[in-house]
Image (cartoon, rainbow, N blue to C red; front, side, top):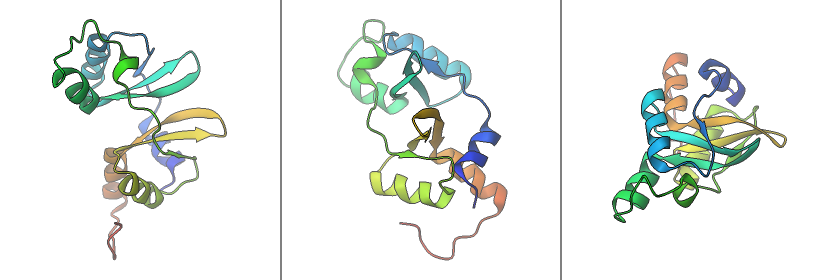
Length: 137
């Protein structure tokens, strides 16, 4: 199995970073332009969280809020599990399952490196031709 570093290297640099003060409608536009289900929320160099399609659906649409008045900070997800560059893909899958999340934050020491998604792990597994002999749950 690959390491987080290998997966991030294949994924390339991220261009979906937004400030926490940005309006949700603007973040949604970036998500659409980048064809991603999330944006990375950073204020300067400080990682704050992510805003996902699920955040939008549950915290804006279902609560009848307006995406032009609501900021990313009001609805973003914080406190995601984090991994390091040498974490294996299998360890990531187990962590996602344990925490019931689709996203993991990657740090190298205190430096933010990116986000690993369930789709990144699936893609990596398919490319490697991995066959799991035992369930990972």
